[in-house]
Structures are given as C-alpha cells and as structure tokens.
Length: 235
Image (cartoon, rainbow, N blue to C red; front, side, top):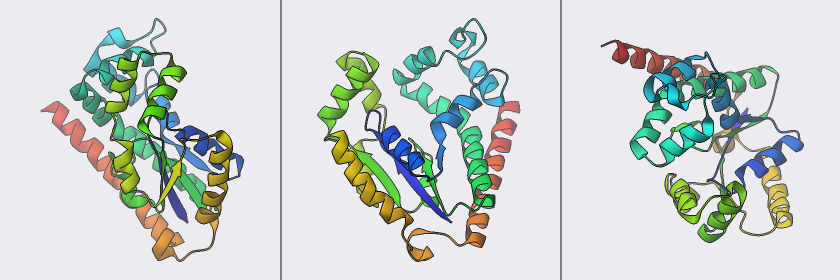
C-alpha cells in the first residue's frame, strides 16, 4: 500500500487537487472533514475545546461556531497551538482508522490530505509528499477574494501557517498552482501517473505487512498521547 501525503497552504488550491484525486478514483482521507466531525456537539473533541475556550464559542444549537473560533485562534498563536494540541489525538486516530478501512478494502494508493502534515509529524508516514504551492501574492489575492476579508486578515491567516516556500523544500513532488486551472489539471495528470505507477516499496510504498505495522504503531501512539493528556488534566 502506498500512503501519499498531500499538503499546501490556505488558498493554495490543495482542496482542488484533493478533489481531482477523488474524481480519478484514488481514495482521499481528508483531515479537515475529520476535524469537523471531532468538533460536533457532544464529542470528546467538542468537550475539550469548550472546556478550554468557554461556551461563548457555541452557536444557539450548541455546535461550535467555527468562524468565531477561527477568529480567536488566528489572532493568538498560543491559543492556536492549544486548539491543535486538543484536537490532534482525535484527528490522528480518525484519519488512521479511515486508512485502515481503506487498506482492508484493498486500496493500493491512499492520499492523506493534511494541511498540517509537517506540523503534526505525519510526513514520516507518507511517501511521496506532494505540496501544492502558489506564489505569495497570488495566495494573498485568492484568499481575500475567496473569504471576502481584508488584506490584514488574510495576511494574519497566511502567517499563521508554515510558509509554503519551506514546505516546498520538503516535498517529493511540487504542484505549482500559480497559473490557470488548465495548467493545474495538466500537472495533476503527470502527478497522478507518478503516484500510481509501479515503484519499489523502498522508494514510494509499503508492503501490506509493513503498512499494517505503521497503522498499528500510529494508532497506539495516538491513544498513548490521549492517555498522557488525560492524566495531565487530572493532576
């Protein structure tokens, strides 16, 4: 089994590339979708976030107001790190259970779509690593237009992430999304061939047994982290 890492930055076009993988029959495990699930009312993630940030972040129906929470964490690095620490165990375990289910079904290639691939140290489990890159000015303009926010707000959100130029240096494959949608599709066709072609497991993949070992190791690590966190909270 081959586990492909897909990452980028806000307004880089990573989600577009992720959707292209899906439309070409390559399964994608999306960390953002899992993050939404772990914040649903009544879940463990929901309780930890409400405990940390207060009930003011909730909507009338009890669900987390994601826009309000986003404003809080994008303006305060310490609170952003706290949110990531609170949700990381739930998101990681959710992602790897999804990978496990796809592995059981016999999927040969699985894409992990993770905005914080490097920050969460998940890059160690993926090969190749694909970074969707865009030049800084294009990224800024696209974010302002997409979210209808000011230049200052857009810069704050971009600066809250690891720079795309740094991620680019860590990539096995770079998709430059600074141009047109047609240019992106053309690059994707080449990348799709690269990640699905037959290569030795040492270079790009894992044997079935090796994949299982990785999955089990990561899942055990996730639950260990969760246990440590709970113990620290009770002290």
